[in-house]
Length: 78
Image (cartoon, rainbow, N blue to C red; front, side):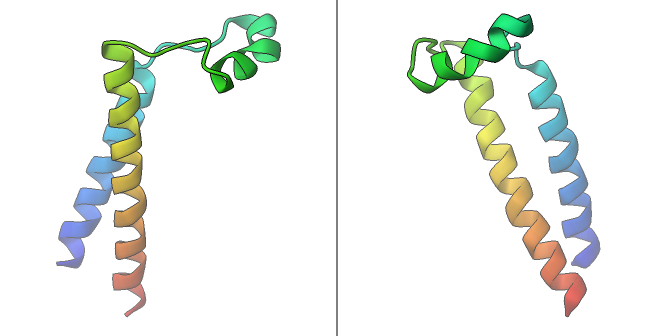
């Protein structure tokens, strides 16, 4: 059981790395670093299509990774 959760944790970690690398950058250069966060915060850039799917997939995989990390930590402790 312990080994199964550890293997799942590694799979989720690799999936999270892959999904993040597939996403496009939200800002370009120094001008994007200054204004890019504000534009994203106030909704000037809307994600559509593949970008929206990758964004939601990233949230799901990250949540699964976090939960599995807590489960593995609990199992190792006991």
